[in-house]
Image (cartoon, rainbow, N blue to C red; front, side):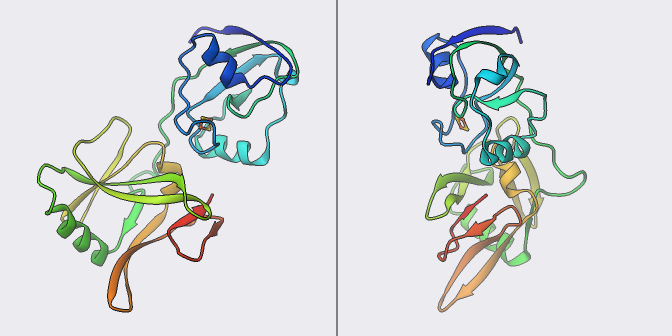
Length: 206
Ligand code: FES
């Protein structure tokens, strides 16, 4: 990708400036620090930008954005001046070799297979995370009509499971189980990437 020279006013967010200039930079979470799709590599002028917070560094690490100068454009605020930057080719998070990104217990797999059977045309169950809930992120489990580029796809029992690329860093190593709560059964994630979970167990902070 070619390098871009971007002039920034004091207090301006790099993402906003790039979009104003018509640069097509992804920003899938809308700048809420929940996706890493706005990743850029700053080659010159990094010292004129606000330093990355721990949360930004954490998100960059999860997205495997390890090129020197990597920043999230939605988090970088200018002190004023020019920066030279590049939009890196999006990296697909690596899976742990030879293993499924999420362990699905036998009970959960049977439950998912039964749910999937109610959706003719669905080719898999899609697991993903989205900004929501009491603790920052929420889990989603949906029937998938197609497999997308970058999905982590694996079989568990009789069911095919797809984890979308942006969610992989958050779900890698998680276990999906079926638990009995009173008279109801429900799916529950045990996620080592969650630093904190809320009481309802349906959202987490990463
Ligand atoms: S737009 Fe999602 S982290 Fe920047």
